[in-house]
Image (cartoon, rainbow, N blue to C red; front, side):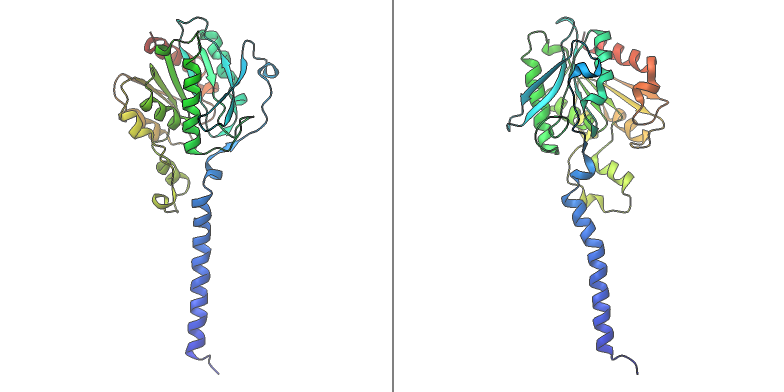
Length: 280
């Protein structure tokens, strides 16, 4: 005997509800826990001397909401040299950028490797609004240093850090801004990695390099690997195209995480010349 129509209807409704739950629950998890997909902090941070860094100080300062930030600092050779505020990418911690300290030493620059909240031994948990506070606290700390010339400050962003560096540049203009492997917007990079999701609804962050660079009047340098497998090369080029003059674009035969290594002397020479000229 065939099942009555009402029983078929109830079965269809149950299947529909199950299908909706299968789709909706993952979307809700992505919406409310997207910070877990965006930030990958590493907690292991030893003193600079353990990484064979000489003349580098471990410092601690507080963001305006009281979060303690453990960062690394190398003073400039003299007040006549530029000082860089470095905003790292989304993974690891500042110890993974120890080579930047060696480059700064060779150039005589000051360099502050900012330890975001939740990264290394900094307190708190990473989130967009909190890291905006971290960059401002780092800038305030730098401006208070007697061997730092505020007119020779340069912001340097790496990958995700580009959006924080460019946002800070709009609020507090530097002598120059360097963006290494920047994406256009958070939504644009989410579209690349999650093309099957409704990112216009799910993505809550406002990280936007395109709109930020349009507002800047300082010198801007964009560096991007032609083989970048994380942030497409075209997105870095779009950020450069949106920036006002003076600006410089440096394409390299590299991927996303190996720009300093594959870029080698070409990369270091270009960055050094750009910063020295912009901060002169």
